[in-house]
Image (cartoon, rainbow, N blue to C red):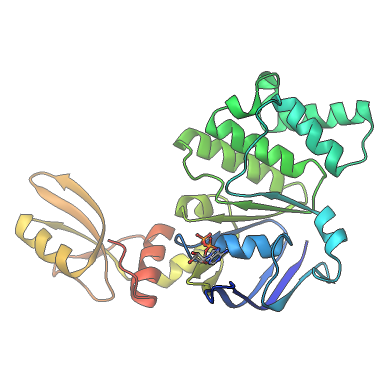
Amino acid sequence: MDIKISGLSKVYPNGHAAIKNVNLEIESGMFGLLGPNGAGKSSFMRILVTVQKATSGTITMDGLNINEHRHKIRSQIGYLPQDFTFFSKLKAWEFLDYAARLSTSLKNKERQTRVNELLEQVGLLDVRERLANKLSGGMKRRLGIAQAMIGNPKLLVIDEPTTGLDPEERIRFRNILSDLSQRDVTIILSTHIVGDISSTCHNMAMLNKGEVAFKGSPEGMIEQVRGHVWQVMLDDEEFNSIKSRYSVVSTIPAAGKWEVQVIAKDKPHQDALHANPNLEHAYVYFMENELGVSLV
Ligand code: ADP
């Protein structure tokens, strides 16, 4: 699906501007929306899935304006909100069956097949009889994805999917999304976790205080910090001095000294050498140098 967003703004009734003149193009594959808490990610996602209206600006999906074709657009979108909850009396499969009754016109047998297919895809077939709200956090999130996929959407919108998950579940969840993105579904994923983006998304935008601070590929964002990541061995005194002046992104004790990585525009110490940048470095660099937000 081809999504074009132009001049998008959202001002809440209390006067707070959560989205400010956002312009973005999102093509098929997996798109990551990165930003700290309060950046406007959820507001943006809710507008995209038509559960909330923008104050101004336009969004088109495959050429259709989402305000003028609300019904049709909705039938093509699967949405997993951040605070998704399940009915307490339904088993995992019953919940999906219920979702299928609401959003598809599949008959009994086809519906059963579709439900089992999706349970298998998200690795929940063996817990299909378990009550949905008794599943672990990661399993609930996977059931949420199955629910969002039930109507075969062209666009899947997922808000903060890995918050609170342990590393194993986080990786499992990312793999499920990568797998789905190979099947002609556009996936938009919002997150404040840099690792979610670097391992899965080919394109991304970074949102800060409602504005797009960066758009492009994760590699493109990393390039912006190249030359500003330094590595140096320091004793206690030097370490304290560096820490008070620069953003220290990693510290490893080594042979009575500290192996330190620092983000700095200029060489922070005479022995400092350039280190290979990654997306986390780029995120710190953007937040601190470009946007003036102190992270470390
Ligand atoms: P994120 O998902 O990146 O954490 P949100 O879209 O939830 O960001 O919020 C962006 C900003 O808008 C925050 O400052 C938040 O307090 C504010 N906000 C969100 N929803 C509302 C609302 N319904 N009314 C007023 N302000 C809101």
